[in-house]
Amino acid sequence: MLRAEAARRKRSSGPPVLVTTVRRVSAGLEFFDEPADFLAAAGEHLALDSVLNTVVATIAEREVREGIPVTPGLPHWYVAARAVDGAVVGVAMRTAPFQPFPVFVLPMPPAAAVELARVLHERGEEVGAANGALPATLEFAEETARLAGRTAEVVVQTRLHQLHRVVVPPVPAGALRPAREGDVHLALRWYHAFHREADEQAGRPAGTMPTMDFSREDMLLRIRGGRVFFWEVDGEPVHLTAANPPSYGAARIGPVYTPAEHRGHGYAAAAVAQVSQLLLHEGSRPCLFTDQANPISNRLYQRLGYEPVVDMADMVIG
Image (cartoon, rainbow, N blue to C red; front, side):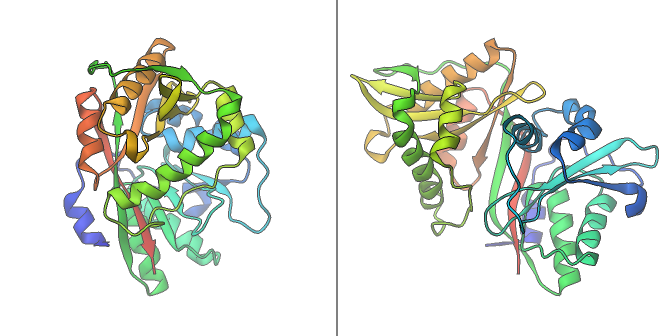
């Protein structure tokens, strides 16, 4: 694991972060239990940079659209950081239904990130992990660790990319097709394999990057929404690429998975390029995350025209 200071030295400049004075909790941080209320308050801010805000925006909109119930006893909230004039200058959330229930932090003034850590500490909310954009996530995690007498460490470093124009790669044998309902079990198996093998490919212990356990019903919703695709050769699926529904104009691609026995044929490049082009045609801005410890995927997406937006990190506090 990387010490937080190492992550501080490695991070890219990313997009500019608005630095302004944020008042104390009574005026500076506004918490929301309901995603619809959060979107009403922070929607304009989310729309200002839909790619940067993609994770928070898509999750909040999905909860509203699908009416996802909150699991009793689990932390679940959104927060908007406000400047002295009331403008939203940053957002964060805690909605992950899986251990260790990380806080997800997007760019916000340093004072707001520190204040968020202090508020959660004062109300007795245990925080063992934080994910999100640097440097705000680092500032939040370090203050959380300081208050608890613990340390903050980086376990995974990722990078958010966006695409303006596809650089078309060579097209291998086969063709892209939308997943069908009969593919649900294969899609589920490959979703889970992607998350398991991502750690292996990056040289990390399996399970380092915690992820949501998708159900059959979750996958059927994605398939029926036309957001899951297979690359198929002679009737055999050899690759999966999926995408989230657009949110404020941005549509996030992932996962991108090729089973080991089918790798090295260019299926991933061709599928991601074609799905990206479909998103551009529908008026969305494609974006995706890469694991900085996996140089193969980083080179692949750069060849397709993806450009870095901001460095991000998954951190543990213990």
